[in-house]
Image 1 (cartoon, each protein chain N blue to C red):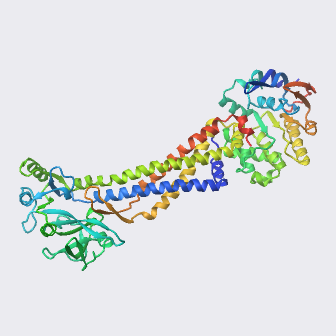
Image 2: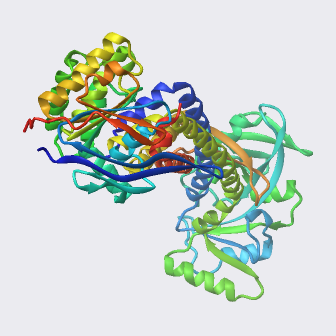
Image 3: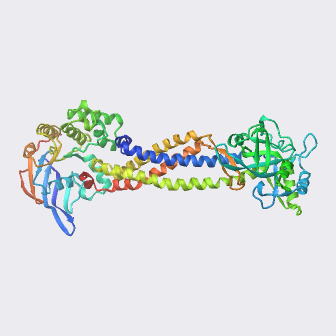
Length: 386
Length: 236
């Protein structure tokens, strides 16, 4: 049987000052790790939640985002009427030629940021039935009106219903606020596509979103458009397009990994230091255990377990510290559109488990050398320790 | 005649300090009978503690032989030696060496955790050992809540809880007042006389040595004199 666990637990309690200091160090690292990872998760889930599997998006070949894609008015017209596109009750093709532009808006808390303005066609909302107007009404084309997402309304000045914001020389009147149900549209302002082109002086659209009558029709449309050398476009499903946009989260992934590595090295050293001190202070106890018949391996495991316990307590505290961030809204600049992307910290059970595993790794790394030192000390030397 | 439990033949121990070899034990030959109470005496540096440590399997000789119950302790691996110590030797230290974060009960239970005894069996053994040293009412006390004499009695309970044949004590009264020292010595004597334990004790103190049946004097690693093997009554 191993050295009893209560020996480790009580030893940690007796040395409570160093235990608390090390625990807090590990807790901080785990909390930062979980929070940064939750930003990554929040951003990813925003993009992954966006899009309708039935819709396909037509973009200029080679472009990675709608904002950098150009589709001429003639091309847009030909794409809308390509065979296989579903029709609505009025017999109109369910297709929307759209354009993305950036508007520089003032934040509520000071400063300014680019916000994505989406010009949509008359069928644009029909293609996105989950987007609901929760205040005010739909914009009317030709009246310099727009609708804004709830998050934009909360985060930017003059974006409430009835207010007017200015971007460059253009004044836009907010007709309504929409709920985009945690999708990427949460970061957008919508207006009429043709009016948007006029206001922002664009002679082209960015993309065409359309709904094929069936999956096989979608494949046919893609094949037909890809083969048409006069168009030079690519066709992707809307969901695939947004999944691809999760690459915007690359910065967070890098930041999370970088912070995690740097801080965990510090925390592992802290745990190691604590465990060295623990081993140093208990050398004679360890010698006594050896005399009583405990083997080197049992001493090694006991010290390692103590280090892991220390780090796991820190891990639990760190997870608890990070929990209040769950659901908190924030925003950052997208690496592909250079516009503000609004999203929420998403702290999931999986993320908390990862935080604890992270703490466990720190405990193991911090405990390995002190445990080795304790186990390898000759019995007599250990007994003679003061 | 009781057979020797410890047979020491031409036992030497050299320590190396830099370039100099220091002889701690020089060709010691000694038999200790089962059931004897032996005191090892001598000035500091005489080699008495080294001899005790070799007999108890926590140090190894440079040359010679040390058989304990027929086992050549020096030839055992580290792991086998740990197991051997657990089963055959109870150790009493000068500084008690109780684990400060564990209660008297838990300290006494420590060597039993390495055996295959059930929790209930362990409880029986621990309670009996603490009863024997007169500390049944201190089971839940931590070492810091007890006097030095009580701590040493807990240590003795820990030494005998596995029912070893051999109890080795290194200056067991060195940190105690005269009254507590006498209590501890009477206890060791009882273990020897009533339970038949072979007790080997290192001491500076002639009063402590007086409780032993036999005294061996060492000086500069050599045996100076031996009061002679006692006639040991078997307590089986």
